[in-house]
Length: 112
Image (tube, rainbow, N blue to C red; front, side, top):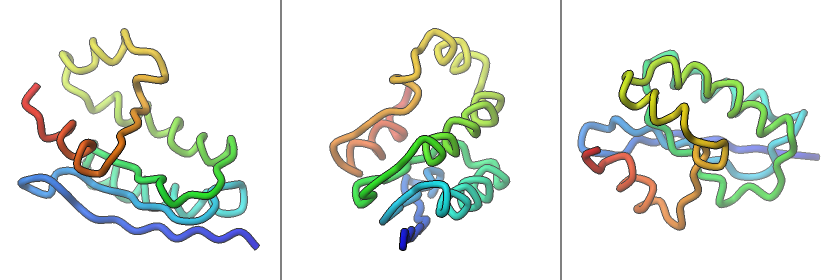
């Protein structure tokens, strides 16, 4: 039986970065849990997100679809300057991969 555990924590000087940590499998049977968590965070107008998939053993296309569907909402809430840069990026730049939690938090914490 596929299982998924999802936890949320916050990072940054003002806890402005939401960190979703998943463990287990993200597929058709478990995607609703991570989607619920993600939508709850976005409903609070938190758009700086780190999704830690280090302990995810498997993710299928419906699992990736959860993240991709919400990119529009995240994009719609970007400042115009950030949005213009977003438009010039390819998908591989939209969903970034970091070697550590520290590197991911530093990415969001850097003054840009």
